[in-house]
Image 1 (cartoon, helix red, strand yellow):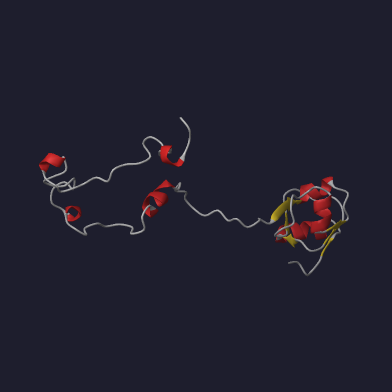
Image 2 (image 1 turned 180 degrees about the horizontal axis):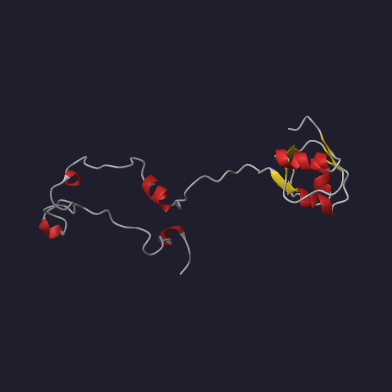
Length: 148
């Protein structure tokens, strides 16, 4: 059998006949016409809920998660202990990135006071927590006044 325009048929089960309602009991869909008994949705025009077709099912299919997860890059956080392990004297976001101490510089860097610093360092262009600032200055280092 050759494939020509008059021999092409749709896939089996892909086409359905429209359900004919309210044409007597012999049709199988008479009396209540598959609408059940009484109630708002048994009447013409009676239906509640979202008007856009398929939108409700789409909303229901999304996983419901509590809270909010930001897509923005987070501020890279770094403890004073991490600065001890590197031999950097001038600490900027770029030098920290090159040394492999942070993964990205997208939203900036914040130095936290975890641990102690044992040598004098100069910090520029980084946010610094108040307790970390005190420890850096106590070790003989400097923190630039203009921090982003």
